[in-house]
Length: 414
Image 1 (cartoon, rainbow, N blue to C red):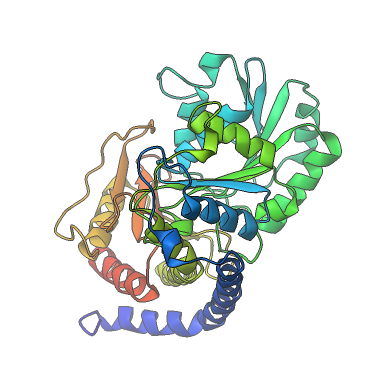
Image 2 (cartoon, helix red, strand yellow; image 1 turned 135 degrees about the horizontal axis):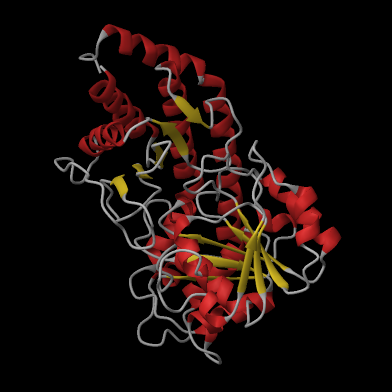
């Protein structure tokens, strides 16, 4: 980075000194979570033959069953589904919603309007058939307070609705400006819901959150939780897949929904995926920590340029996502292009805003990743709408994030 202007070089040095205590804290978290994962692998006696995979129906796939057990163990859940047949985090969430909800039931989001792609699943955005709305499943949500916190007073009233069968909590901010919710905040939400309604299913969208703290929402009473393997849990190695963890009866329903009633979670060939899924989960605590360290660096350095960032460099971290408000579509495109230019794949490409499936606004995305769409690898994207914020996430190594962010700032602002 010797070619940078002196001013930028100085800001980078200052940033690295400034964030040193936060980096040390993340490294302690990496160590703790790595130890937990290793203990799960040892307890379940992972062997070479577990990594081979199956074909056809996938009957008697011992490796798949053991991986399910490892996920259930780590997340303090009764059971789990971990499959390459789950195509994305949105697919894992969709499977969970359709598994539990029936006509005339209602889904209630306590954490505000859900992420863009889930709005399409529900039927409040887009015009696709097959939504929850098509099956006469109702939807409501509690708008957040101006400070981004849950409005417990209003939610208390809404939760009296007897048709509510599932209450959903979205851990990460998605494409909202609000802060992501920490596990401590989710614990408070779960306790609040249980005081009012003991009968509802509490579901957590855990995308981007795994391993970012030393506890997970299922430790505190979440009934069902889902995420993607090409986010945190796949460690940058898994090429596809997702997971659902939770109560045994709900996992049974999810298996029947994902596959077919009667066959459920006990089918599904893993072919050549198991080795990647095992190894990805094993290194996920380290890789997640690297991405979070990169986000802290990006936040601190971007803030030194006078830009509005969230979280700030010293805020608690509960996921990978770092936002920066750039104020215009032109600046979004310029910054995204710079990130793309310092990616390992397609570094010669300039991102162009376009319409993407599942989104109402045009999207712009820099993602030069080894696995397409992998957001545990460094990416930078956002909807073309005010306040014209980009969402920076991922990074397999802290070093890559530092190189890419520093060069993107140099190309965009100097």
